Length: 166
Image (cartoon, rainbow, N blue to C red):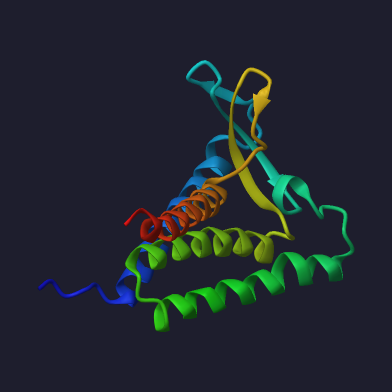
């Protein structure tokens, strides 16, 4: 019987991959996109454009008082991320759930580092869409949070449906 992978190995690898991907792409965006016009790919399905978001999702909270921003956009999210990491390390034993939760946390913490050291500004540079139907401008951390969250919801829904099918 195959021995399961230790949770800390899953957490470390998943965190490192997601966190590094975001940090590296943000650095590249700063180097190659900042101060330049947007660049489209695949008939503008993907547009690369540099921006800094001082709010949360779609700039929500951009104009909030600084004390509220610290609490809602920094302190509380850091606490939640650390709690979830601890949960993954010490309580959770399902490898898929560990990977998905850590993916979400890695993206969240990467954006929180931007907020902490860049006056609440998070580097965003990706825009997806077809014609006028487009996403907001986002980054790889946002993709980690979004895809990790969707995959977690789908895996939990599948798990709940499994007993009913038997």
